[in-house]
Length: 200
Image (cartoon, rainbow, N blue to C red; front, side):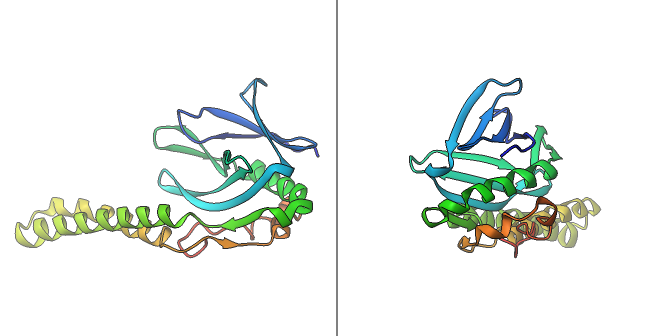
């Protein structure tokens, strides 16, 4: 199957990777064509779609694990610098469509899951709760006790903490039918995991 190259970058350490489907698996190269790795369709054992943070926004990320425990990741947004992300939804959806179409013959040996791991969700939920609680506590102290208007600057911190709690409300990953994402790429928009807390 021939699909457009999907360029992904998780962070500064990972650098850019170019993902493409081959006749037998998913391959990834450095920009310019330097081969980095390939994972055979027949060796894949888990495909997990989840919502993850991308700066102040959120993105859909696909994590694939093979029979040897090796994991490869690509997402609908790519990192371009500290706190900066750019959309890569179009090529992400095309790659995701092609991948699921190729994996249908192997569906009996692959776990298709939506959602983060419970440990990650719990850690992020607690982190959001701490941020919200600390900002709210200092806001109450500064605004109601010391009557300082600068306390209003803490309200966005409260909102950010609540947003994290909603986005990462602990829940177990749920299985999904791979045919859901194996349809035409143009139809995937309404099927992608929601980028809100109730969508994993």
